[in-house]
Image (cartoon, rainbow, N blue to C red; front, side, top):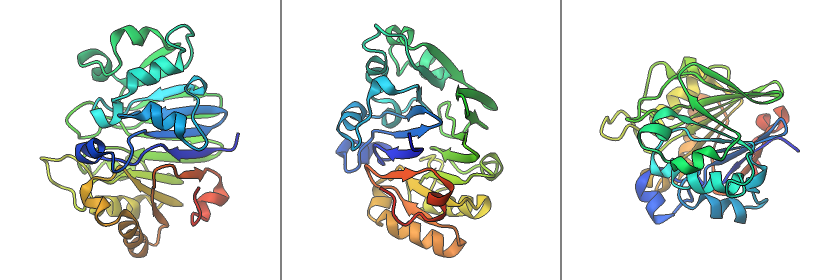
Length: 267
């Protein structure tokens, strides 16, 4: 299995998700022989089965929820049921913040019995998802509910996904050393505590500090979609000197050093 990142959806926040002007299926990492599905929002199961190539939920080895908001976890119970054959086959592992499982369960409690393992994420956590694949949650994000971005280490590469958050000065250090940096970029400009999302200006500051081989913007709100996102990505790339692309629904990015150094033609 060639290592890859597949975008089942690039929708960010409630208005884009409600209109499905971008899909909200989450991300799929196929690395180190594992299949990791992150943040199955509304319609995720449909997007998984209709994707090219399709995602077989029974092949998912780890389901990761970064936080309990609807656009990230609307299909979480459906994904768990599909991963486990309706609960008849204890397979796969579910990783989620404690408040997404206990305080306000986004995976219904009956379905939390179905996976082979259920792991509550924590700041500073490190988790072995498969041989040669480690997930780390370096810090809790500032997003109103318990929220974690993550680092994936596999095959000599490090991929980081900076999920929903208000800007934090700790972000560059937490995601330093990334070969691939995926940034949830919902707005044109951040720093609005009513919203608690990163803007394109925040993404630029983060890309300039981390300096990955490649940065990918995703999780777009209405402001970014009107941009369009590719224009913001190009501007960030020109100002930082780091290759930056805007994700599209269905896009597949090969995860090899060669692909990250030549990002012009993602799938």
